[in-house]
Image (cartoon, rainbow, N blue to C red; front, side, top):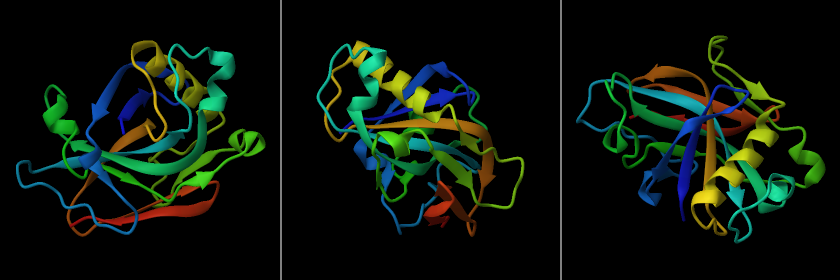
Length: 183
């Protein structure tokens, strides 16, 4: 399984994507243990989509056929990294995935990810997410073969500093899909 995190500005994919090891994924109901090798960490909300077909050089008009489920997730990194690198981003437990929601073609058009924190500065995203997911499929398939089970995360919004004792909640289409405690 490959986990690729694409940076977005909410409307477009940025040039930067990071490949994460499968050990970086935390499944639902598990806490995030902050590593001791840094003093400050931050997290971003993301939409994650799961690849359901094998593909290489996928055309944009067919990209929607290559993912069948979505979830909300949190992508954690070192907060004050002067130059982000794999060691400050792709560590064990860096990605918290919520419960997967199977989607049909109609449901894909109405995706909305909500940061349920009460903090209005932590952006919510909707509308462009389906187009961005399709663009991520196309971008990845141009460089490597995508396979069933691969996960593409579309990180958006502002980084939010986190610390031990925090509880974060993220929803998909108004339904809480991920609750994670920081330890």
